[in-house]
Image (cartoon, helix red, strand yellow):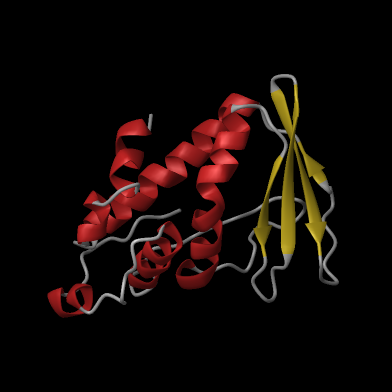
Length: 161
């Protein structure tokens, strides 16, 4: 994730979408705001140098599932993330193998991953995911959004290494 370079105008930040108390609503609203900036979300791998993802929708889909994904990685438990957006339509399955984690990419489109499995170290994967969480909060701070101080986002900044 590339952080935005400047704050949003006060008018844009104050017109934040209706935010409910649930986590999914907070993530959706935050990504909607970040989507109005030059913030970038990038995913690559499985033979594709850059997946066609955006901030407003695809980052929201990923971030909604991040807490469960991170917990699964930390506990060395099989978990998955479903990138269900039209045009992406891929599931990433995370399968622990000792200190490593096999990530299996399953496509529901004509695109086929090659290779279909990548194997990062568990600690490197955890660091990448906590880094994404920290960058997410930092991005909200850069644009001047009060959501950076809301739970659970506020705790993500302190967990980052």
